[in-house]
Image 1 (cartoon, one colour):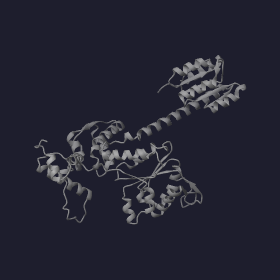
Image 2: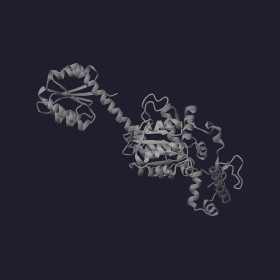
Image 3: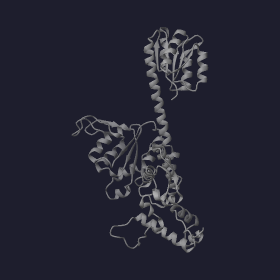
Length: 467
């Protein structure tokens, strides 16, 4: 940790010596100056100063100008102004210009040292806040969302366009596709980035408690309401609220949410007082809300209020080109987090992972890499390190269901369509000895479309065929 650096600017030699001695004993690096020119030179030379003790009247200049120099270069550095009785007005002016505090001479040295400790604590807190904000913005920058597939590029392009607006966003996609990550990217790249991002999972809280969670309650509103409680909408004021699994809202709460979206106001449970709400709403669901509207399970007017800007995140099986990138990303994450030394995945293992359908999407992939990191600890991940279900996931062995029959237990529609498409492509390739031009003619596809499908699905020729 870098030593704290304190600059003392005062023409009183006795005071300078006393402050140097006391602050040095605290472990600080102390630089003393007797005049404005000397202080200007130090400020120009030093990349960082953590605290300044500044006399307002100097023999060759004005302490106010030194204060301006300090605030211009170091910004967050606290400045304690030291002043005589005759220059209290100047000290007040200095405070308006950003000085942390001022003390009138003569003063108690102990009081001054207590004030320096308080100022440095404030400085450290400000720096820590800035560091955390910087990390947060960095974490949710668009280029830190992993993926190069066409599907994820389309999503990020749309996110970039809508982030700086205040429009309501509806993010759709299967469970585990990263809907909250996209919601955070929208918030932290918007004008509301310095305000709160407040998430709530509407499917994880019982309906009778969810209204209180969203809008708050007053003491005595219901059994157990022993104090007033602020709701998520009020906590998110001037920021963003993320309503995950919005499709699980009861009809009663759908009406109340509709009012918030229309009028930007609500009442806490048990209160007649209306609370204004300046909140950007970002909702997410893995339910087909348009279908839910048809079935009478979701209000049509609320659906259209939420669906101002829809963003659909493709499942991982539709962005297979991102699988190697995501695996390496999570390997790096868990190597750092768990002090493991996994250096990658073998080629045949990557083929299996590429062909696997990942029903749990990115969340499943992350859990898989974490499991391997813990069990393997170091080295390369091989096929023997995979759970059994990965070994039976080759696309070429996926059973194809007769299109005219559906078994009693039902079928996985997307899986069946995917398997049937794989079967058609593989049959055409087998017939033509894996000649992609001829196979495209048989399938009445453009060659580029076929090549893209082969690549996306991870289809490979038998070992005895060279292409």
